[in-house]
Image 1 (cartoon, helix red, strand yellow):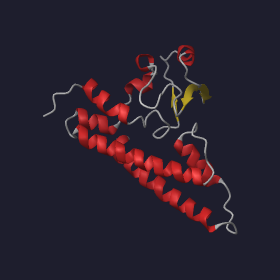
Image 2: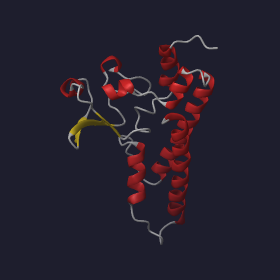
Image 3: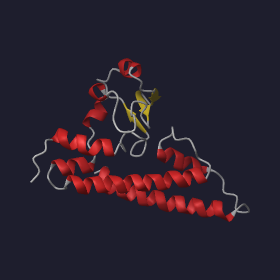
Image 4: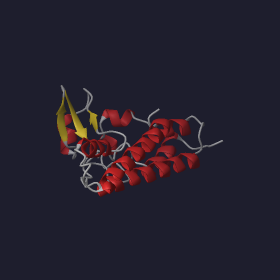
Length: 173
């Protein structure tokens, strides 16, 4: 039995993860009606129009790689979001150590995808991972070109599928 509080779990898991802020789980985050867009922009969020709402792109400009710089003033969606791992740990269904292993595996898979994207010429790490993937996969394939480029695209598809399976199972439920 774990005697940790929900805040303890956040402090144990989130600084080791960051997938909800670094452009892996989300490409952008819409503001809610009760968010103060001008205040959030003043705190450093890069806001854009998304339909009739304001949104900010991922990776989040206020994420320092481990923690949110505006945690106490973060948007409502961010305040409400809890990943599947955190929920399971809080419910006592999963041990912290097991959750940390899943986080490490997800980060390893993200690294593999990012490495393949770089090999394929996509170096813009200010774009969400899925947008980087879509950009590469939407480029025309030169079948008369180097076979390695075609092979790397295949590797990218497999690596993204592998990552998405893990994210769906552990983080997005």
